[in-house]
Length: 309
Ligand code: HSE
Image (cartoon, rainbow, N blue to C red):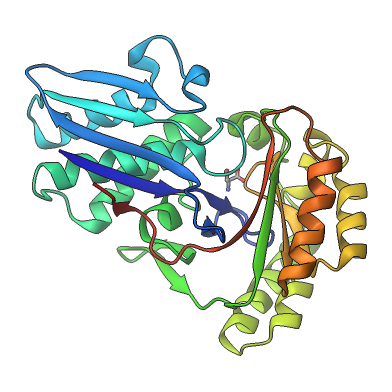
């Protein structure tokens, strides 16, 4: 038997559309992610458990874990009879890398169970492909941090998929999922097909400046540069009252605030616990739209996917 945990992640991190992603972990030590357990079996069997298992497709062939198993079998050119137990603890369509959690946990669990036949870069390519099947196009900004932990910059060139970036250890990331669903595929089609030269330059300035501030240890500059001119302007309408929410939590003391992945989760950054707690309280009262919604104060999860059983 093997049991794997894969953490939630913030795609884009506000300034790097499709090229920045951060794995996150609640500071209270609780798990925020999916787990996958593999057991020996005579035939393939998939058992769905967890808080959000009722959101999974009824037809097993549409379940992403089944697709992972199918891909894994074709990759190894073998039929692999196993029982997979998916604990779906991440809400689907939340912007917290829910599908990446299931994909990464399944692929890593199978790879470990069968004595690591696939190497790291191949694994990432496979995860990207599978993630692309759900979201409409390949992007690594959830699967890479979910798999490897930390804040990852997607390179996808010269045989390198991603590289880990330095982080500010005192930054706290308060995430709020309002309890409603936004499909990544829909949030991606909401974006324009082309951008003007001015926007391209502005985007490069923010992204390059942000990465420069990480390496030169300038947290204030980094937080000021976390502006999204690519996705945010077109996705605001998919979130409940995002601009007002951002204004309010900035008043409380947030040094940064943006859309997590394709939303509707938002993240806010603060550099002390009291501010993070005040933001959490405000978001709980004002941003949640259903009883299922949640708010967590998180740090960057530097470990990523790991074996927990
Ligand atoms: N980079 C992706 C997007 C992340 O914004 O569409 C999806 O979670």
